[in-house]
Length: 117
Length: 110
Image (cartoon, rainbow over all chains, first blue to last red; front, side, top):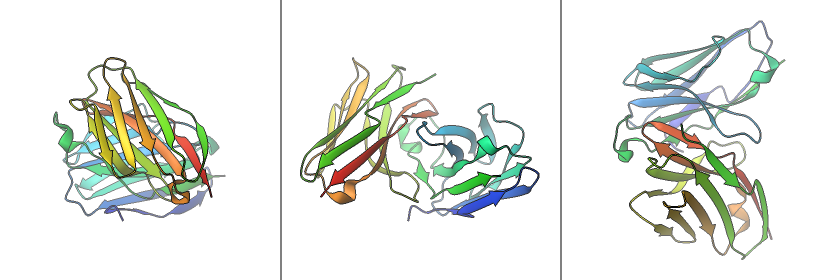
């Protein structure tokens, strides 16, 4: 257990559905991240939040919409997805963003395996 | 931005042998290099890391070396065991930007 939980663990959805992924961290961290993991590719950073403020959006299509209501919770809202969006979506957290590396060690959740039909 | 290359993409060794995975990075300002192990159905878990002011770090059967001049770092696993079988990712952090390698699937044959 890393202290980062994600629900659901598996999700199958049609292209017209709307669903949300949830991430919760119990580590007292202030930075949270969404990554997309596709087979044989590097982890792709999607969004970064630091103290509930979005600090990075890596050119992610608008059909993915993040929400961070507090430092412990992070959501990824999904709508009108495409089959190529099928992947493992990983949430991570770290102490905070900053110039010192001690703030940036990231702890990952188990991921949500998303299949878009 | 940072670019991380990882080799090999797959590695198969006999139990008890050593395994070495290598990564190169492009941003000379990168100063933190973690290694993650991802088992089936789980998220990546940090197994060892090294900071730019250190050339080598060891934790039991796992060691990491860093060559800042050449901008490459390596993971060494000695006396491999079947439970070491997993996908291993390297990463490099420059500022707030953590970049990951594509992963190495390690299989340890009993």
